Image 1: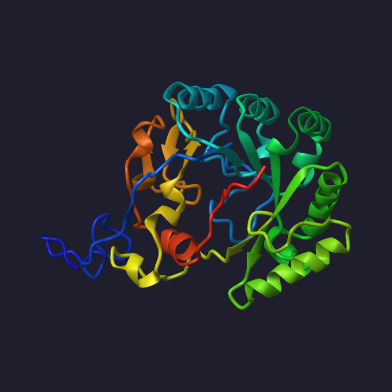
Image 2: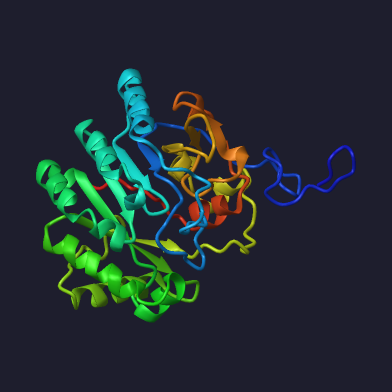
Length: 317
């Protein structure tokens, strides 16, 4: 498709139409059920294919403060928003110096709380505080550990030598102390999901760690995400073709709060996956961010619509 001035519009570029001139799909916020806080993009490791480019040097998303989080919690309470799950992601959340205070604030506000971690040294430094939180709040605290593969060599190729062993130390600590434990795995393009689930079951069972391996919340198996992927664009017609509803896509029920480096305050994004594209920044408050989201990013196609993945599926209490 060409703009009036003659320039060709590329894939995922125009918010309303695709490169072929078809009407692009959009997703309305049906109910704000999941609110994510990105606690900062700094991480203790550098992964080969991190979708958000977290590393020990990337502070493009600065550390959220306790005050930032409380402001959103106050908005939820004041406006009666139907949030049932609060998620904390990064970077590595346990590198945020206020992470325990943030977790306490969210849990004390009565929300089921999901924290994503690589379960390595930053988390293990907070073992005593985590035990205290588990004692006080029980199963409302969910900890989801990222394990890129059930094979140590494949995981370490992504996350660095020795990463698998350190993650297993963290997993054993969490399982051994009765935390509500979940696992976030990855399915390579050449692998079948059933085979991946069996591989995780076999590897973790050998360590005495038992989950409901068929449950998509206890073990979330994400599709492989590659920055060089070239998926088809999602048009309005795709919902019927794929037999899917826009209500199934994450941005129909979720938003994410971030603090950009140097910004005066937090902002609300459409998605946990798309942190740097200004088109997906929706406002400074949850109320402002309640507008529809157009699916003009390749992650919308590969991860959500075609991949069928969701970051924060609620689990039964």
